[in-house]
Length: 334
Image (cartoon, rainbow, N blue to C red; front, side, top):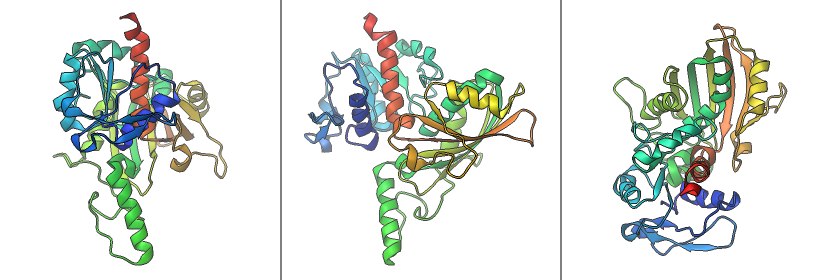
């Protein structure tokens, strides 16, 4: 679902890359994309987009939804009612108590609750990479507080966001006027401390999502404070994360735990270039962690740098990993 969008295309690519065991796959999109041909990763196989308005979900096992909350609200319950398990990338069901919110490296057991609605939620992109990095540290010394500042790429705002960064950058070089359309201010050569709508308490909805989703996925007792910033990067979200723990923990202990944890690549050399940036993580599966150090301003504190491809681990990859987990734990038994 949403096969022609950034995340939908990435989902198809990852299904092919990971050799997902599928007998049949359908690319589904809105009526305006009906008949559009889209490639199934680099397999050479072309799929003709089907119109969601006329798509019959009966007989299908899994539906990967990457089409926004509006279409999801209309079609996800129809798919679920037809016996097709929905893995939804929108924010619509994330905080529904009857819908599991899953990051396979962090809370795989939560998937067992999918039968209540036949729907599984995929978390927000910035939350997904952060909880992957936090999980081994939480297991080791129990995190009590998280303060995170994000540096989020324009691809998180879809194709329009990527186009706007490209067009504005070109306009500035040739001396043309820059007019924001997708974003509230100029994004080229600038940063914008505003993602999603503002809430009554002064935080944005993106920041609220990081708080409540982290609590649901990792631990409801963890205190989380987030500042989410859009930066002029095409792909890859970065996060500066400050942590406080219940127990004493050293940077070396944290590095050892991160080095062994699933889904994480520790690149932490205390030298020029001994860390990972968004450009380097684009197209990769891993959540990269760098610059792990002790925080001398608090008891049992650590600071780290976390980078991941938001179209992959933040969206499409996590959805496919959920599908793999679902298949291993449930579908093969059916």
